Length: 88
Image (cartoon, rainbow, N blue to C red; front, side, top):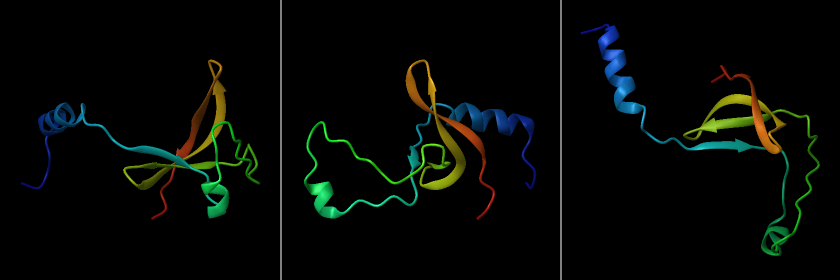
């Protein structure tokens, strides 16, 4: 069998729809010294030399999938997907 049918697609979607995936966003570039990390306390604020309008990477199950930007939505910080990453 070399081709999947529409029925196969529906069956796979039905089986995988309830699956949970790990979804992470990452600021590539900013660095934090280990001693600063170890000294962190509740209420501390981490300030990175990273422009707020600079795109961030979104990984799904550990693989880079999207570029996004930080936005505000309904008085909460959110990310807006800018595009799919097609590079390997």
